[in-house]
Length: 168
Image (tube, rainbow, N blue to C red; front, top):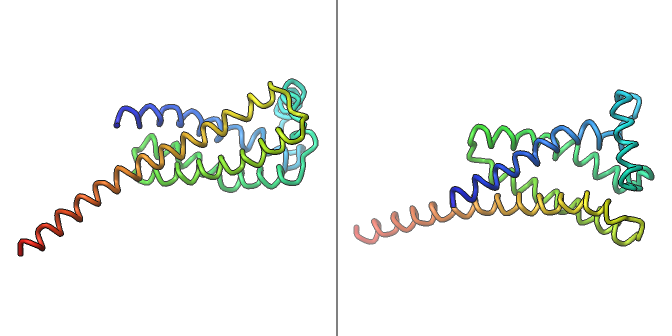
């Protein structure tokens, strides 16, 4: 079980690092004024929108702007905290992973619902968004694995305490 968690942590570490960098620099351009960004980053976002046909970044529908604010105010700091938790081996990593994963999956459900329902999304664009759903599910799995192992330990401690009380 430990090696499985280490493998998931390794994969999630890179995912959290991507979110920590891309959320404020790329996604933030959707809801923040583009004048605060260097021209190179604005050009990078324009290239991405053109290359992948990401009409959501171009049209900026209200639900997406709200999801980007959610990403900037909640998920971005949580991704930085998760990077720290992985590196420092913090006990609360499972809980923060569960929060992050559930939030990403909910956001991706709305975004993918729009992409699939609109009929405007190319396969190339879907292949950019679908992995985020997978990483969110992986984060949920990691949070549940660490929570279930701690619950088992607490459950066995309770059983030992109850056994001692019965003997007395």
